[in-house]
Image (tube, rainbow over all chains, first blue to last red):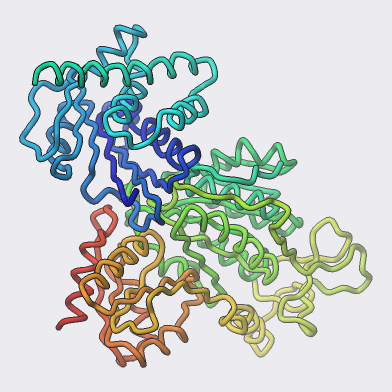
Length: 187
Length: 381
């Protein structure tokens, strides 16, 4: 794999940065790739804009930030307006349709998944939405293999929540399977 | 408790803290400040478990004072901060230089001046790291460009501080400090630790600043049972205050010469694609990551571009620059300030080649495209 760039965006409190860390860890520690994860956030810990970037490569990574991503996650309206169009042509844009209805014109392929709603339905709370999102991203793009991602999730989250988080990852993968089979039956 | 060797995804600040532990850190005093806080956070948890001491002080001035005090008592001591705190540490940094107290000061640069942009990177402290404290004084300043180098250079910083009895500054930035990256940590037993020269315990008649046999006098560590006197006044070999005259000048010159005499060893550089280069990008820290990509892109366009990264910012590797200036058409110096490193490049180049500055001060990392644009201008005027 030559350089592959991922941008995760939303707001403080949605677990955007932890999601990026887990993705980078899956690739670097368990997947044998090089990975760099960077982040940008305001002084507030909740509510402010939150952005996390992950660069993956088999080669040495020079510039650590995203130039134009292949994969974009937007978890709220503001992030959607700012980042949904900043993607390589044919790249993947995953939108949390719980919070975002209209997606602006983008050169990427848009996938609407009710990520936070799935979290509420399956777990009764929003907090695992970031892990569901990772399952969706990996399921759609294969940017890291599932075993590596599961290992990284299990390693990073508090032990008491390990099982729930692994289940959340599975919810993400299954959402992709449903999305793709629905798309296949449409065509 | 040393670190586990092997592959990890680690933050630059964490790697810096791990490097400090691997280098034998005994004492950390600090006051948390973004974007350096993780260094203290990590050490607050880990250092006490190794038998070391972690103190959160009331402010940065006191933190630096505590570090100097710990050093005088024999500890391998460190603090970490960012711009506003680095300003506050300057007075005691000068004190450390004069009393020859080995210590390491980490400055994770953020956009200033003043409180500035707390969560955004900058390289605005390049000159402050050299000249921030008043009076002539030795300075060694190391600037890592990767998480792995945060680890390695922290070890180097401790070893140089101890060997030369000087404060050493690790000058990182928000990008390098907060970035997480794949690192392979070495076996702790493979890490070499240097210690300060030290007067053996209870040595009759030993002088605490005896410099006739070495430019780095063996230290009279408090508690070793030797006579020690420490003052911010210029002092004689006993450590007692002196007035103006040759002894004062000799002390100032010796302190500076500790670094100057070892310039070729201390001034580390990292070069790539320099053999046939016509235009060379000179960059440090996070900006060097953008610069290397720009150089690679320029090569694809047929521009004979090269890359030179001072790993040691101070003493500045001016001999290397001076030699290159004879061979190349020009230099590009991208930096996240309004022009600091470029002064040193110009000073070394002495008009023998073009020097093009590129500045960015909006709190965002300079991009490879920006550096490439400047490279094109110098390569194809």
